[in-house]
Length: 379
Ligand SMILES: O=C(O)CCC(=O)C(=O)O
Ligand SMILES: [Fe+2]
Image (cartoon, rainbow, N blue to C red; front, top):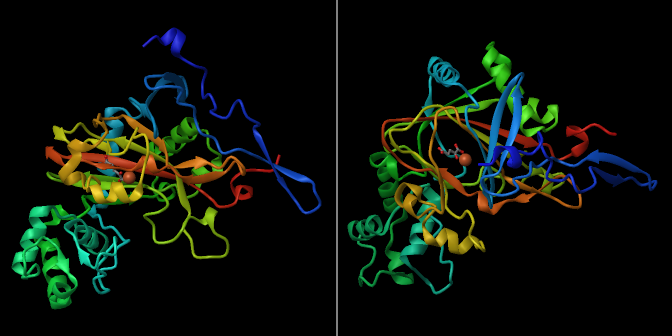
């Protein structure tokens, strides 16, 4: 890259051509000014910006992709720092990762999406994905059909009559057993632990806070609240199917989208750091990146969110490199409020299966409160 010409000044703000302040009018017609939520500018793929995230040390921030916007920051951590974080996690102990948004206790809701009163293989696959967090391929479904004698006329569809023969407890037992026997079919296979900066007397953890603050330039209150981070280890075949880090995959809507209702604080940005080099596999995949259009149904029906099987179909992949940080924004900015807007659907992402070796990452999510008044001072 042409560093001389291509390097922009520190921290160019994507919104620099717009008003920095947002006017929120009050009843008396006066207005209170807030700063817009910052979103760094990517310019174009390959663009490099110099950033000073540590005193007296220069880092490069490279635009890896525009849709969604993804930045790569090599050497965000030194090798020793990566090893130190892994050590911290190991001392604490890691637990098997679980996904919470699946209720296996309820009955099976057979999802006849197209209303033709029979279930296609795709409809059955999605019924099982959504109800059991289990990602099956055609071969697995055929086995399920034959072992439970579901598809009596063997036409590949489960009709209304065939459906009535299904013993729900039997089918549930079959699938729960499959989860136990083949954990690799689950959406996620990894172990993890949470590290809380305020409970960890470690200068590196302190410095990490400062680095992400300087990198993202988000207000201190956003950096300092929900400041815990996750360390994840994937062993052989470990993976994480495509998901959004914020918004629609949660149990409740984002707090900034609803009033007086049960909600979750949504995660404006994700910072992920690779803590080791993976011998083979373990890429971070963005299956719909750069697609011209995005349709939720088409994507979910396509099955390619199953990265465990279809990583090769993902549009965009990042290869793990020890010490490299990756930054992306899970939400757009709402142009009217200047605050967190809708989820950027193109951020569907996950971890491809580790083929050889192991993979360690750390995840740090920066949440935005529903109320800019809380996150930003009045001006
Ligand atoms: O393992 C990866 O590369 C992605 C991990 C991820 O998306 C997550 O933990 O939320
Ligand atoms: Fe993620």
